[in-house]
Image (tube, rainbow, N blue to C red; front, top):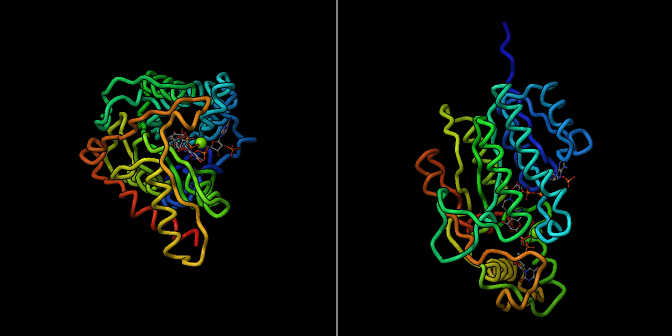
Length: 292
Ligand SMILES: NC(=O)C1=CN([C@@H]2O[C@H](COP(=O)(O)OP(=O)(O)OC[C@H]3O[C@@H](n4cnc5c(N)ncnc54)[C@H](OP(=O)(O)O)[C@@H]3O)[C@@H](O)[C@H]2O)C=CC1
Ligand SMILES: Cc1cn([C@H]2C[C@H](O)[C@@H](COP(=O)(O)OP(=O)(O)O[C@H]3O[C@@H](C)C(=O)[C@@H](O)[C@H]3O)O2)c(=O)[nH]c1=O
Ligand SMILES: [Mg+2]
């Protein structure tokens, strides 16, 4: 008798993490990757119907409302996608006996201090995006579903909309880029998150809970931009690239405030799942090689 193949639902497959998940999880089962038109996460009934029809064994949910500034003027939509959808996913997963891997953010924290945050630290989001992501964590956990929540930071990769690609484009067009130098954290490669997810799926034991999962090491946005431009200049000695000037956040006003301390302590992930996230310098070099 043939065994039922493992069905893995990947939401947001057109996004940065979702795209990498498609590649990394494909060898592990049958992937369901509905487009936004096929599964609109802003519609709870659509989520319920889709999950009852497809009965996935795993639900991997990187889909989110990720426009941090725009969320300030679209709080209802951000809440529907980031908070209500995880609640419905959790409720249905609990009924199905499906396991969930969900993604959250450093922006659940206030950003006070300099010590890397641990999972049990008090939260205090500064804006709508962070608040809706925090509500999503809490709602998912409250369903009692078997869920791992990976809190990550500063996600980038060779594809999708991200800070690295924005900076490389701007650096070719300008002489100087003024970038905030007082927000501290770690860039995280989208592919490393997908590899971690595959690792969790494969690991025989599933230990639910919140885990911090950010690139190893730390920098600032200005430090990240500076290293990206430096490495690009080494590869393209003839190119005229902008110099990076670090500025205080007060000189780069945005609708949503960002945390000054986004450092995430990833010890729990290491100890529980025996997975160490790549150092951000190493992943940056790999992503730049892929872009070249
Ligand atoms: N990007 C970052 O820097 C960080 C991200 N995170 C978290 O990691 C996760 C992955 O982020 P990332 O891959 O960068 O996000 P992206 O913005 O690259 O992708 C998000 C995906 O979600 C989809 N989506 C949005 N709204 C809906 C909806 N109503 N129905 C169905 N799909 C929808 C988008 O679809 P479409 O393509 O149609 O817009 C897109 O494919 C998210 O949970 C995010 O909160 C955490 C820390 C940092
Ligand atoms: C383009 C640019 C940005 N900045 C600043 C703004 C901001 O503080 C920082 C990064 O810019 P971004 O627009 O990429 O920032 P942002 O969209 O806030 O990135 C966040 O996205 C969400 C989804 C997360 O979960 C977070 O972990 C984080 O990655 O750099 C400058 O100072 N100068 C510039 O020229
Ligand atoms: Mg952004």
